[in-house]
Image (cartoon, rainbow, N blue to C red; front, side, top):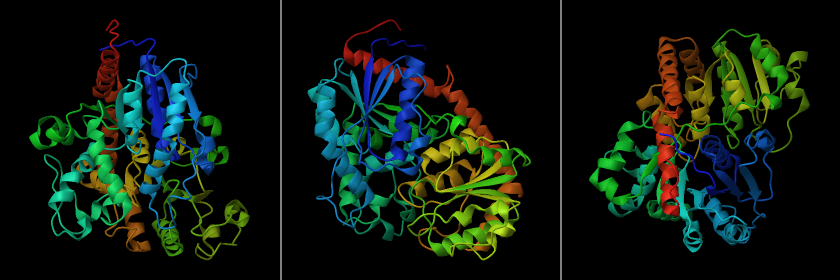
Amino acid sequence: MDISSKDLHVAILSSPGMGHLIPVLVLANRLAAAHKIKVTILLVTTGVDQPESNLLKLPLDQSLVELIKLPPVDISHLVGPSTQVVTQLCIMVREALPLLHSAIASMDRRPDALFVDHFGTDALPIAAEFNMAKYVYVPSTAWFTALTVYCPVLDKEIQGQFVDQQENLKIPGCKPVRPEDVVDPMLDRNDQQYNEYIKMGKQIPLFDGILLNSWEELEPKTLQSFKENHILSSLVNSPIYPIGPLTRPIEPAVSDHDLIQWLDKQPNESVIFVSFGSGGMLSAQQTIELACGLELSQQRFVWVIRPPTKGRVDDAFFNVGNGSDDNPDYLPDGFLTRIRDVGKLVPMWAQQVEILSHPSIGGFMSHCGWNSILESIISGVPIIAWPLYAEQRLNATLLTEELGVAVRPEVLPTKEVVGREEIEKMVRTIMEGKKGVVMRDNVKKLKIGAMNALGNNGSSYKSMCELVLDIIVRKGDIIGV
């Protein structure tokens, strides 16, 4: 199926945060590169830049993709110190809706469709006012989406807190969800973010279509349930478009050349990469245990480390090659000297895609954000799952129990400190053990399947073509197919 869609214009509303903007950018790139669609990204901003923002590049074809940063929104009068992240994001997007309206109204060429991420479902009236087709982009799994749209039903069926339930939460046609794996908004039904999540679950089915950054071969059972399970399909009448895996391209121009040169000298699949994302700050005690576990494993490693307390990173912290023994207090005494030949510490952030794709990387210790998981799969790298927040516990369970490409600690890292001996064991399992070989084989098969899904005859390519055709039909301007 090959669909050309000249003169089609799509606007995409992105909620703030690099983890939300990245999947929007790669979606825009895909629409432009594969279908020649003009895309305008409208980014809700807060006026605060994240340290890794300079790593993000616009797609190569900037003639088709434009990024417009909406003026920063101030929600300080609407939130307090205890306001949870989901609530803050939903409020930010709501406060930015007049700015979105003005931006669309001022465009010489109005969009034919409005895409929003799952924090932007309140933009439905704007799409209706401008007579645009409307789609919601959930840059996560079909399983997470099923839980989200079914949560309003669970809200009526289940009494008390979800995390206190003795039985798994049943979603029609899908793998049940363990109470301890529920997404953050479901941890406390008395918090405002729970109400925001319920609202999101009710609004997602109101869109003309639901885009997922997943693919048919990764989650066949769940995706089939959206079509065939009478309960789930009655809740979601809109078509589901699994169009993934959409990931960032490698950007060598911004790489850490010293780090890459060090990786070039290491044997294939001999280095474990440790990174917990932009929000992945560990406690001081957990940081020490992780350092000791990595050292005990006797494996090579690259660790993107964020200090557990606020403040700048001490310069001595990174003088590993000079034999500095001036450790900050959140690392074991003498750690930098002892690991200088086998470990590399990177402050705050790193070019993750380039590192994961390097031949020397053999494992990835990750917080299990979906962007990071997809980048690991595309690189054929098995994972040590270390879920911290959001839907990451769900993702970790999918990786370990369904896909067989990861190991995880016996206890949730957010509940207890994971000891150095268990960390050593997980690292050795991935890098040395027979289970690691099996996981590596499994993830490489997923990589091949992912590439096939994105190919011209693949399931994700066909799904994207169906999406584009739907926009064209709704526009009422059928062109050659």
